[in-house]
Image (cartoon, rainbow, N blue to C red; front, side, top):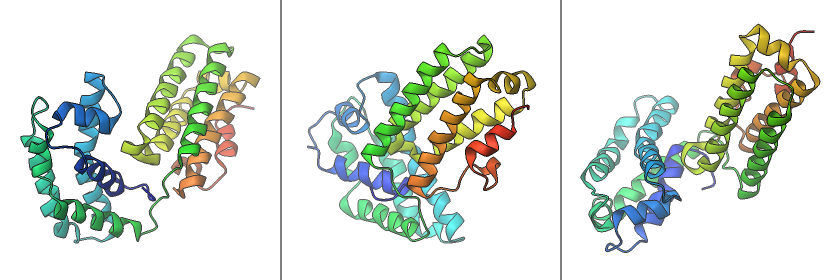
Length: 243
């Protein structure tokens, strides 16, 4: 996957799945494709896969209004394939309904999106680096002198960030940036939280969040945080704080 679009993510999954034996149990096939043996996580990730066709369609329509109708055949076919599969059955039931021409149509959609300045895909090294930064931020939060409600909220957001990075190949870089923006927006709307983050510990946390967002936007070419309005993320975030 050279670009970060729903169509590229979907095409990559379908390419890998097409190489599986038709006799492979369907649940095992999805578990391997989606990188989890946990039943709840498997269903959550499968739901994200099933959303990819319509996400791709929406991006195509935004880029080329009126053109999404030309992609409806493969979207409809995939919806049928998802609906007709049985996780307790054979992978071949799903695979038979997603033949090579359908996968090729998904690749055409990916090519269409790649031609409109699509974000670049993060490298494995960048993803690992981001995960390390999030883990370090979690450690910093646990040791920081912060009000407990704020600490709990920020740790929840860090958990979301970790999950978004682990599932980057499903949800893309936009999700990571959205979580950081959501976090800054929540903190910025609360005077007590802003005051707490104006401390030395707080500024370290703000800086770490800003670095994570900037790493993604710089590596992928995604727009910077919407709220930052073109200002460097850290400088914008600091303006939310008193003093």
